[in-house]
Image 1 (cartoon, rainbow over the protein chains, first blue to last red):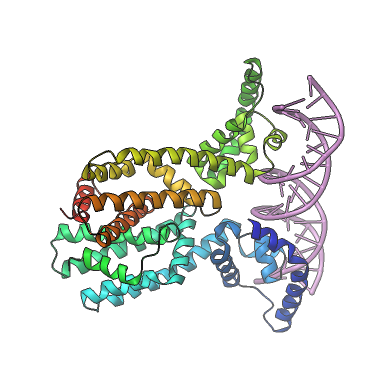
Image 2 (cartoon, rainbow over the protein chains, first blue to last red):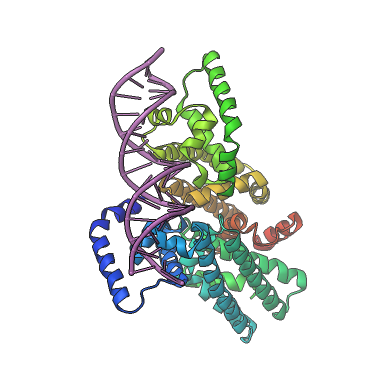
Amino acid sequence: MTDTAGERHASASDVSKRKAAAAARRAQRTPKLTVADWVDAAMSVLLTDGVGAISIPRLCEHLGVTKGSFYWHFDDLEHLLEATADHWCAAQNDSVRGLHGLEALPPDQRLQRMGELLAGDELLKVEYAVRDWARTSPKVFDAVKSLDQRIFAVLEQTLTELGFTPAEARMRAAILSFIGIGFVHGRDTLPTPTSEQIRATFDFITGK
Amino acid sequence: MTDTAGERHASASDVSKRKAAAAARRAQRTPKLTVADWVDAAMSVLLTDGVGAISIPRLCEHLGVTKGSFYWHFDDLEHLLEATADHWCAAQNDSVRGLHGLEALPPDQRLQRMGELLAGDELLKVEYAVRDWARTSPKVFDAVKSLDQRIFAVLEQTLTELGFTPAEARMRAAILSFIGIGFVHGRDTLPTPTSEQIRATFDFITGK
DNA sequence: ACCTGAACACCGTTCAAGT
DNA sequence: ACCTGAACACCGTTCAAGT
């Protein structure tokens, strides 16, 4: 909100830079913008300031064009967000496939690896932004949902391989899933556990 | 977003109803709106459609006044949201005091009670809306943060009373806290656990 | 095909004028 | 003190006109 205002104030000098960039683009034989360019710009704003900050004027300034250009590529803002959602979902599918790759590892290392993946600061930021976005976008919501279910399934499978009964494996998989989601949303309101504490937690839940 | 449009379309007949209501208010000797009236209206929209749906025209229609009225009570939208945040925080403090009340209970019943509190559908909706809101409101963020820490402290204390060592109590309190937050955010993307499963989870974490 | 520029509706904000 | 009504800036959207 406040930074949106700051954005506006800085625009006087930015505009000329953008105009120069636009001219450069034209000279460089990339005169036409592509859908991907708009999606990239939207992604960049999404990660910096959240979904709410994605506005057409801001993207136009970023890309050095006027609003009419936007409406040639998209029907409306909603469609840009949908395209951006599709883009993110594709990337997400890759990382789900990354989960698949994990299944080659021995069960206990697999869990350790999933924990490390989640603890990464960059992933945490993306997850947080995207899960917020899921509130208003059914498409993103569906993607988040299938990711969550995929993770749950991998956990359940892994715990079964570790020798738990189906009921035990299901309960512990649910616990780990909720802890993971809680960790994404609670990292700012609760003390961040040390990696030592994370390991202890895993050992506890997996029964060592 | 779509329902906002629906809201607009229904406004033709609503407006006359609101005007009648406004006239009624005047006749009933409650001619002046109070800050609390605006806050209540904002709360109602918050729970129905989220923070993003709180707009001045919508509240004005709801209360049967024009926008100028709003600006007599508040400097801007941000201040209304802040007042609404204060209101919610006060209610929240009460429920934190409710947690205090729990401390009279024997430790194991206390945990059971906290689980039941969280499982209530109404509380879950409020928590979800408010935690979303916390992303853009520092004041709400602080309130959520102190609530989370309060809950963590109560859990830690309870587990200590149950006979766990300080380190064990801290780890298990963290686990339960993250599960709780994860439950609030994951209830739509993961299968809702049955109350039987919830009980089993509690028993597992508390070492029975 | 891809973009500009001007237009319009809607929301946030201001303010002079009413009671 | 509390509110109306008209005004203005800004964003989303449209569209005729340019290259």
